[in-house]
Image: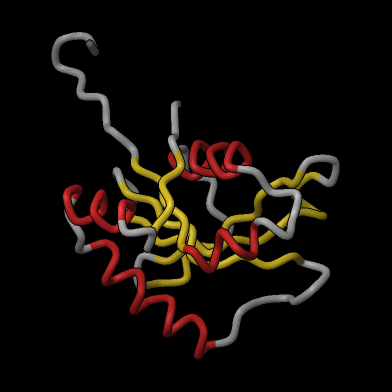
Length: 134
């Protein structure tokens, strides 16, 4: 139990099925994603893209951040984090404006879900939860 007067925030971290399929083709692990969450919690974000969307470089084992992956994350910077999209720097430089618009819509939908709805989405296989232990 946290000391009196201190609340511990329960962080729930998710990845979409699309993100998970992409991730399975890389050397990226859930632990890499958890490390990225820890950095973002401490303000280390590569770009704020608007609409609760951020871009975060994630180190891939043996390649570091420079040779690693770029992830697009929807977050309320509180207790919910959703990995929506990923790409490797050597494959593409960035996402398009149309892709960003679509990701913002997805972010809006996901960030309005309460914990019960998120748990249901996980049980239905629509989202995968990463168990983040800071």
